[in-house]
Image 1: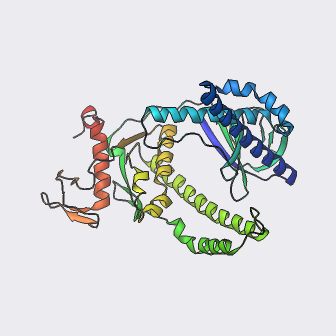
Image 2: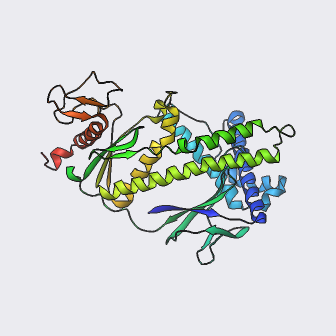
Image 3: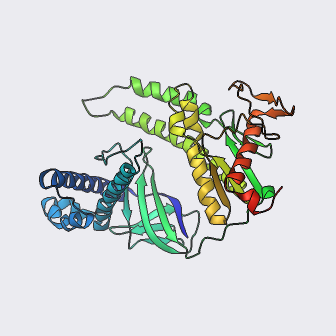
Length: 384
């Protein structure tokens, strides 16, 4: 089973210089490989593989001697990442996906990272991580792991903080899926007023982390906008300090949100054997400019991905239903379709059976019913 462990790095000034050199060299090689690959196809109608580009690295190092100061494996991994980007691009074209992105050149504004696939040592006794050419980087090793290290990704955030993401293989196979029964199944309806509504009737409050820090962020944004540039293309020292403060404010919101999503997803997976959820088109929903900010702040996509991989880890079932299922307008008791229900109606009474429904709880119950019936589970396990 593959698992990733995320650790904060505390490098010295000299180690920071080496890390930044790695970021720059990896970005340079990625852009060089992309340009070389594009030119070869335009001029010679030839598609260069990652192996072809890796074999040209020694000549590139002779032309640019400063590339020899960094780990050669990190440079090779940047070319493999480019090859993966092209593979994903052509796969999306073949699937006729609506959003197809051709690989682009990287800049300093992009996420800064590099990968080391070999010769990485994690010392839990001395709390340090050693890489080729960068030994003994102090780290906050909060959790220990047992397994084979597959690769290590070193990254730098916009708040000038360094992190190491270690992918390990613990050699444990994924457990078998638990049997599906109606009693141990829960349906989840995602919303904005409440973050999640369970078919059991429980409602999870939307924490609204962005709203808590909006005044602080607004003040920093105004301050940064007023601070002028010293020269064309050069930031003043005070402006850079403000930028880092703003980045750390956003990073704090992201950390709070991720912590909340991890705790909630773990709790739901522990308490249920089968989890049913609706497949939402989040990007299409964000086209509504009135709700785009609120939808982006709740991070539904991240929450669903957390549920999905944790279900695989613990042998639980994860079922999606189609996004066009009328889960809100159908009575969960008798199945009557209420075509006149509008978005402002938070409660409604079924015209057939007279049952009073909470809009969101009723939707969660229907999600559960549709997920089980769609998989022909009710018939297979003999439920009433």
